Length: 407
Image (cartoon, rainbow, N blue to C red; front, side):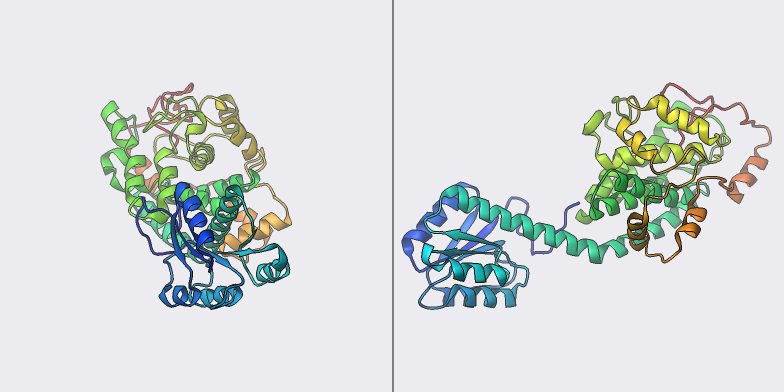
């Protein structure tokens, strides 16, 4: 996921570096080395003037000498940080002033260069400072934006539920399952959030599918199936209006891709499929198979597990199927991931619910049939579903007689 806390200068803009040193030769060397490596270097031999003209967002990183006649580098760093608290600053020092440079590091300098330094050392420090700042920005964004995105995603899930009664609970359940897979795989908090919200919103595109197709209890025609498959592209288009949702949009677009390249909409293969979409694909198929649908009854948990295992390495990423075994047990209930993991998941979900109650409410079985689905089944008295064979995907090794997908 791409976050941007600083004013944008366009996708093609080069990172800007402010270099402050009272030695013109040093400034020339800094400018030459940085520009060759794709940075936009701005130099100043007067720290007082540099501070006076500085404003937040002008530069991605600052390189400053420590001992300068007009203003000490530590004073300059403190003053710049008053204007932009998260600004990365690399200090430059001579051999005889290392103690001062260490003081600068203690006060929050992002890195240190000791004269004479090589081009490799310079670029390593600048890139390290930029990387650290990006990590800090992403952590800040996660902290403040995660609850907002969760709220928006759950609101949209409710809209899906109103549109298609069997889907809303599936979306919320899928968010929980996918996040737990992400945790088992060792993804960080931000990636777990991305996958969780991707689970909530994976079927948002079904809002754009006609009722005659979406709610049809019987077999879909080829043209109807083509229309149904559009939901992944529609969903991605809905989410791509915001850069902050770009990774989530990719999950939504590709959650029906197959490991063997026979999926849609882009026939991606293997690791070419975004990891989040591969996670969603496994959780989506399992959740759908053990849930009653308009066009067929639910499978038993052991049968759903058999389908996942049979299609690991063809439809699904086998590593993720294996990880799913640490998330849902053979009885269809959530596995306990340990005290620390469970506390982290509850915190991310914004709930203080005890583990036992959380597991009971999120247990995969039994899944109650939505009232609207039952009513539609009664209305379709001439249609029988008892003989329908569920498949983990259309065109796969176990094609359903109803010509439908599991999700």
